[in-house]
Amino acid sequence: MIRMGRQSEGMAEVAVPTREEIVALLLAVLDGTTSRTAAAEWASEVQAEIEELDTDAIDPEMWHLLRLAASLDVKSGEAYLHDEATIRDWIEGRG
Image (cartoon, rainbow, N blue to C red; front, side):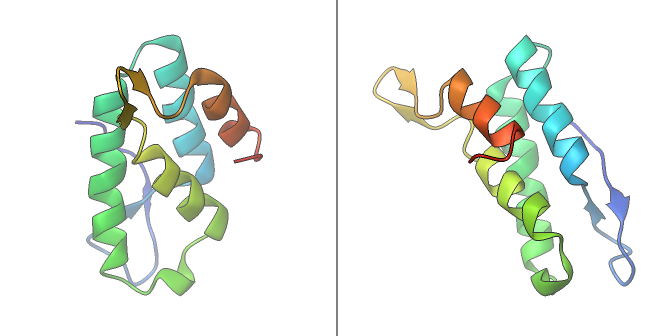
């Protein structure tokens, strides 16, 4: 599974990703080197680990992007809820 991040002070057990790491993950989804499912599963696992902590100490931009990444594999009918243009908007900070 995808593993990235840095351990935050007081969070020895949780590797908290940076915004840049999540952007790299989204770019990997866009270029096909990582599947939407793998990315969403990783983001969901990390989100669950972080939610057990004091989320006030977490970078809000990273947190928002992580939560969006956790929904990469959600479908609306046969199509993904979030298309490639939407993912690009997230990367550029418009999501």
